[in-house]
Image (cartoon, rainbow, N blue to C red; front, side):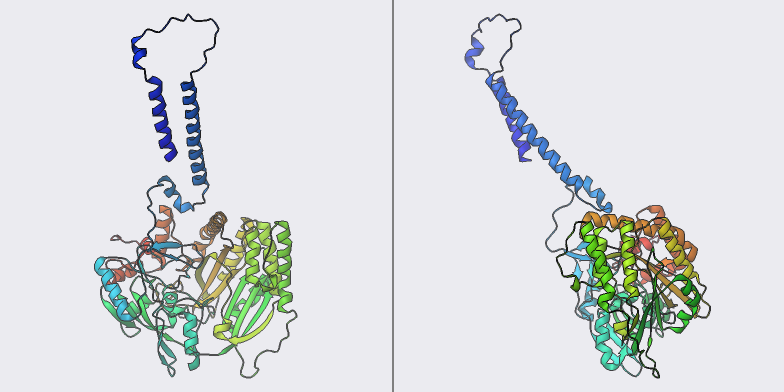
Length: 590
């Protein structure tokens, strides 16, 4: 800008000098000089100086414009921020008091000036009351693990991380009452001295209890329901009706709706959970194939308390993991593994060393300190969208699991966890799979079609394709909701890792993942009546796609009933966010 101002002043100055005439010149008549044919006229010193100065400043201006344009158009903006490029000066500098809140994978992030963290119920009630009076949003957000950032809102949030106490333990009835901000691992550690634990777990332990029940999270086991079914009473702080206590006996209809209420019916302040006795489990991990799975699938579901399959794309390997209580008569199994943990991971290390040479990369850390999931992330980071490279990584993973076959004994909260790897995009669908007595095998057909889709469309799909099962839930907003007691549901997750911090590479992986997800949606979801996990559902940007999603949700879930409860409990929608408003649109949507 300074260069342009200087240029303008200089042009004005030299024009003025060139056109200025002295008083004597104006009076006296200039002498006659006849023209000489074919003669050249030398420019005057003032004209030459002006042209030189003009060219210099024009060059400066062109350089500034070129550098600005090159920087602006090469900066890796995400697709959803392209509109910002056309309005460079619209966005003011960010205030220093903004809070940056993102989900675990860094795929969703907001800046907000309002982030409440009450320390007790009274403070929470005051926060909700004041927000309702001002009609200011305070979306309930847990520990931020949801892949889709369902709890985020740039207009304001409330987090209960400071309300994380175990309030009451009834050892005889195996019940525990806790504040909703307590994390799963904290809760498990806090009640183990009473010989109690949770009936089931998700893959990780860092979720807040209030969050994990609200989105319909689940563990695995065809006889075990999703985690919201463990809730037998709740205390909700609502904008319109204050603090209410609901249970199976007290307002049961609202209770069932609010157990998986997506944070839209009230801020969950306290939860009473039905627990089970703490017990040791035997985990058995082994490699199978599709032919054997088809033959043994029904028996595997019926005979094991916990079971999951990990399919490895572009290979025939299926990792089967079962977990069951230790037999009182036989005790833990006596098994000597064929390979040590070092031998099991060595093939992956070898591929990594070989790949470093191929991609002219270097590794500073000692590879003996790197876990399997870290090695996988590092391998994928070298060329994450190269199908042939991803296939090699998958084959190395299959070899790792072949050499990791065996048994492991431990407490349920130690055994049922699963190392999911680093930051990632993930989509998980839930669909009916018959009954426990008569599985319909649709779950296995789904996987067969999914693997064929991956290979036909040349998708660089990393491992695993994870498949788990649950019993039904009586919560009408649960993806596994059903009125039939014996119904079972299969949950299938697809994944793409984000093993790099490079913005451009993350953008390319994101685009490929959504292409992958769109193919599964188009070819599989309607055919198998599959619906996404609430913590993983993404809202389409296209209006027609959004309308189609809204119509699908209305066929599966009681959207009108849910919206009616929201109007009664939160008429100003202070607990909502854009995701909820778009998924559950109504005629009075603000």
